[in-house]
Image 1 (cartoon, rainbow, N blue to C red):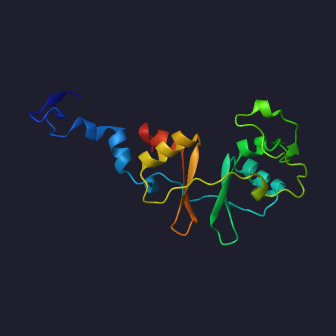
Image 2 (image 1 turned 90 degrees about the horizontal axis):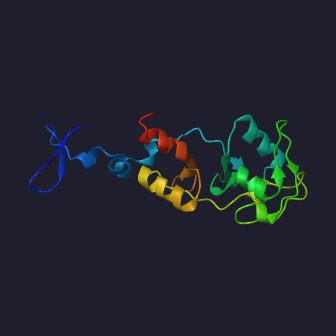
Image 3 (image 1 turned 135 degrees about the vertical axis):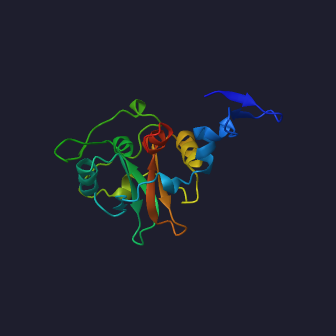
Length: 180
């Protein structure tokens, strides 16, 4: 594509009259609602569900993170495979979580309280605080929050904090690459 500079100093695609910055992902990401990329079929876990039960779902559905909801279906946290590791819980192919001793120096941010009894531990015991966006957020805002908070996905919640979708870093990358 060739560009030309108009009298106002803006670069335009030659012959189109369209400013070249209007064709960049950054421009569109600032305008595109996150609802255009989000997945609406989100698997969430109640906060009082046992570790063994939600780990089985995570492994069967190849999920790396899940929103945690209270009895009213409102978002209260996120469970990720990293959260499980930070609590000394390892996963195996047989859907059996097991506790393992992990040195605090091996994990970024250190260990959290180690889960000692997998039969009584619940999602609430191992979840992280929830970061979330409302459906009015843009793709650029989602990408910025993921980068700044070092997370790979975010739940999209209604004003009542009910999960209505999920957007992942791969969703955003797929869109930037033109695959979505």
